[in-house]
Image 1: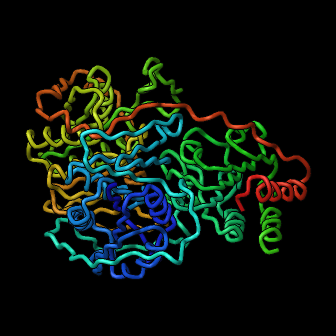
Image 2: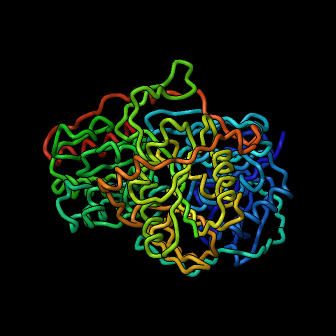
Length: 322
Length: 257
């Protein structure tokens, strides 16, 4: 058996759900699981990483690693790999993961499979499955000529069991590499949303032209608040300036895979479907019974979004608070 | 100075995808090929940068089967790129593609900014620009929606999670992968299209770059179509009945609440 390095992402010391998925999947494989955690809050993650399957937690505890810098992160992952000697790296296909690991792969001569939705680990070999051509088909990704194999998984694809409070990991503090940098992060401009990003959200409420005007996104926000969901949008309403591009789901927006996607007033252009057809359950609410979104939906309601959504919010309130 | 743009030709989103009998790929017969949508933002930004800096040139590069990818190179030329190079190759992965691009850019020299799209819509991997940057020992930023050039450095905005942005300064030469929002790509003008048709595209054989076969690290196989999905369950009744029924189904049948 070999070692699996899991890049454990966290928000101010709270382990992300997507990283929990990876730790648990790695633990099930029978390999030694080495979690690598960056940043000044790294130590706060150690216990949770152990309870979710890590055997060892490697802390790169330094404030310089609080903000993502591709060169700095690459150098420190390379140093973690040198110490841990893994045959597999698992990381999320998150904003950081997708940017960082191709560069790591190029530095270390590793293979990288990005944006994967299934994972099979057998001994120290790994294969993954990923959607191709906007989810119109799937392909197996195999590795060759690579002693180090990196898989970047989409969030919400792997099962999560309850953490085992009886388990713990050994904790090692590692020296932080500080190479000369050509990249300087000057500023981080906060987004307007405090909610989970679309790419990580377990429930998404998406709005389109059927909402008739920008102000009506308020009824989606109300619905999302009740469900703990994140609000997305179709390209049409982003291009119309109703909401920012950060909220766009689809081909030139974000690819999402929540457990539940509620499409409100979205007709379902192929570019939109490309970004959300990986959702497990899709609800379509549209006044046009011929809208293409119904062909992808699990449940459909033909009706006026402005009438249906507030009622739906009330129904969810009743169902979730009893 | 030279401004490079790395582009990829991809199947149009509207194209129907069929899988080959051996399941090792897609049947390319009848596919409509287009310039990857994100690469249009890259070409546009490169042309704007060239226009603002007298004496600079835009070089557009693509790796793939030359008989078809030259069409996307001509699209970029028609949008205003000055020169185009095709690396003739088939069945490469992201790693070997990035290696090939790096070799060509090093050989041409004088690179100041290297643009690409943030991902190609065929395999959604968003890998080549970061690998290319590493092979060139250059900094990179992906998912860029704002770009400004200062000669020895560039300042870009990178879109991250939750609508947040990072403002990043990089020393040049730098690799920049474009997101939607960076600009509004121009349509090729008729004179542009005519000029692009006559342009000689430089051809390089992948084999001549001496990149070892062991630089192909990843292989796609066992292509399958998505499983047939059960037909949609339409919920009838007035709004009150529809919403009550939907919540019941989500809780008891789909079990997603």
